[in-house]
Image (cartoon, rainbow over all chains, first blue to last red; front, side, top):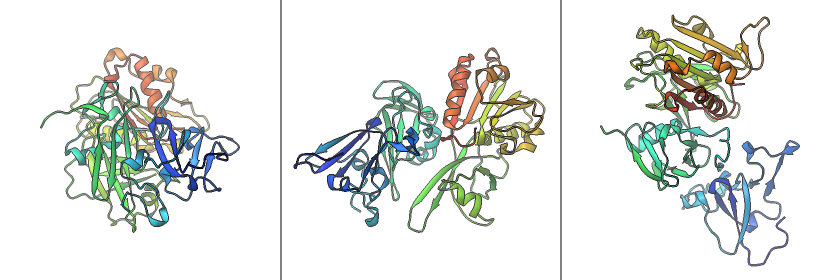
Length: 103
Length: 96
Length: 223
């Protein structure tokens, strides 16, 4: 889906219902590392699971797997999302226990 | 996980202000579910107990039941509570 | 379901309808907190009734692993809104419970009995089936002036003559006190249940200020 994009795109900002956003490096959502899910169990993804469309980024902490995605902004520069601005870690690698900024 | 706005219907895991009674009591030192919160976005006053609350995100989000704007966000980090209340125009509770 | 009695030496007492928060801390410091309505009346040993949710973070521990003598971290009592002080000069009391939403009402009913209140009460209790009804024996032996009406939404025992199906406008208009009596209503249970019932009570003429709500989230327990 993110096949043909400009070379200066380095980051993605997922924009969701309710004004939520979350930011990710482009490299973390390409190459099969992440999915945009809109189906579940043979049918459309229900709202309680984040439908109609949500991000699934299994290698990062759960708040990066944004629910109710309305769009993906392709950015040249990183921009912290909703929880990141409140002090949650900008990248969120659970293997390095990056839960909070500064971890 | 983040949560959605109420839109036309409240998603079925949204709670109400009763669910943040404990953390608000920790922050304010008094019972706050009976406080009246005035939304900075739409101006509607309402009981904290009747706000729309989401607990499943990394932090707690409290939204206006009338317009769905965020009233408060509570983050807990270790032994510190952080309250963002920029979505409130006013908060009123009985003295003493 | 499991009712757990807690020994809380510094407990300052509680009001009927309040809840407490339980916090579990894992070895790695990860914490999970959940709120539980207090099932016991003021003055009785503090008790909570916990439903085991398969994907729960706290209820599996409380319902399966917790043993007498174990310590848990508790905060409370909490809440000044969803409370029924028996001194409240209400005419009639309407309690509408969806599934485990009946827990705070047990506290209220026990409190009413303990203080000798004569306030007329109707408890409309929606459960999936008769085995899902909590406190069944106690509710069936309810005190004078308390009428318990069940509606079983998924399965009914043979010969069931009671209500079936979800709490809707028809059942409420049949069971609820008329709005002209200026009753006080409490609605507790899963969020969608509470919102539907509260809206219907307002449609029946209950002033919104006289309809108190406590949402538990999810759809578990109400059918």
